[in-house]
Length: 405
Image (cartoon, rainbow, N blue to C red):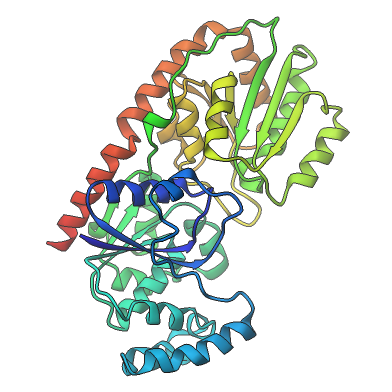
């Protein structure tokens, strides 16, 4: 099959779930072309190099500066116009497509799709699906598939309203959800349930080796969180919980790997609580660095919350990776997380923002290291059964094939 991926930015170190689909489809013999609006490459996943994806004809030539975007569009107009006058002129129909046309992004995408025809056009995240719907309205051939992941069914809807996806629901052929929780949300928004399939995001089990965790209360116990330093990750609640736990157990080291807008605020909180000796900010890391952190840590924590702006998680990949490596985890009853973490089996789930409950579960795991191995095994088995990317990619191919039929 010939498959187009429409994504916001590429390469993006935080979206390994999309990269895993791209490389998996290539391994299965399919042709994948990436259309990304922007280039985001501070740190690049090793698979991007291994599969020569930077040589893949990428489309991230949309200038951020609106003036430069307009100047470049002026010259491209003459290049594209003779190939398909109707499509190009229609993409500039500001009355029909609104700000999506005014921003010229639809024009750039329309021009990029003039040359080729695809069997499947797979849009990742709802807003990219809207562009896909407009492209289909302009005459784009191929089945339109859209995957939703989190913020696109929370923050984005809160900002733009419940009807924001109406055109996508009408034009789209298939919608992939990563959890049953999100499937229900999509149906409530008006999507035809017959067009929805729950297809989980996955991880490469071979890249994350299982190892047993052992430590006594007299040894240093390493807690770990990996992710963007954003409100929905709930970092401040971990930090405040640790401030409670160290009153009894001072042998704690909490490692925060990742970067983001809340870093300065979180560092200030750590200083104010006198936790400078216990909390380490590592900044942005690569995938191989993440593997080493999982191996050296004892407990993984991610107390996700619904952010003030409505942003929510989907099913965080780091929770899958941590369990695959044998780590007991502590997380929250949030979004699709209860489908990823089996409460009481592979870890513990608490209510959002419950500092005391987080502190209680950390303390319990410190005092009961004998259950770490049992939880680690249960987590590995659960992730391998439901989130193995190799199995999921084969399933994705069957989903595409059925869609084409």
